[in-house]
Length: 218
Image (cartoon, rainbow, N blue to C red; front, top):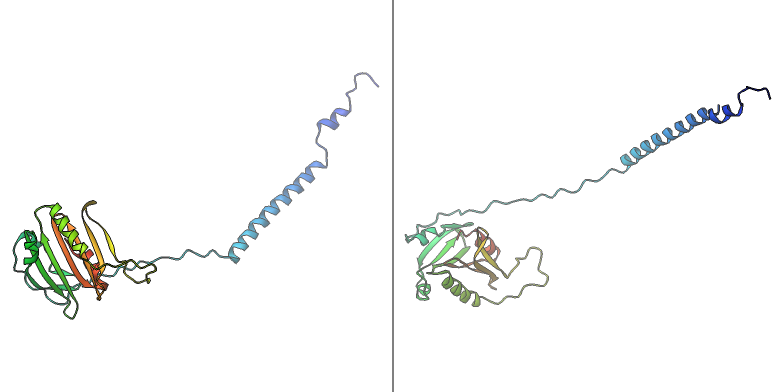
């Protein structure tokens, strides 16, 4: 070996082989082509199997029925009597008189009234004002105890009323009394409820009893 000559094996280990760059470029082209094919395939698959949108649920709110007949003028002028409604749903006040039976039972004042739809449909409402909520609650309990006994249906029809029904009467989210609604067994429904010092008993056609109770303003 001639002294001072550079060793030859250093070029082979430090340099990039001549065949490596073309092979690497070919591999990159193959990878890119594969990605493009995958994207196109997925898009094609999406168009072949369109996504079905979720069904839209529409709630139809029917207007509250109103009377077609004119209510009579209520003769009572007390604050409680004038707060009583002259119309409930399609029913207009038809008669109003003092309820002597409930006054005898201890009410400060009481009224027995009927409402008519102008045909054969009627509501019968007895309303009373008591001195204290405890007295109203106790009297309402006697009315509930006298209601017809009806057992809840095990498998009610889809359009059947969920009766009997009961719960709290709320004012601004605070319980101020209780309510009970039952099937009267004769085509009518009966609702009894207390609201502070007031007690009510409403008899209506069965199909209207829950709505009539809900629309009664007191």
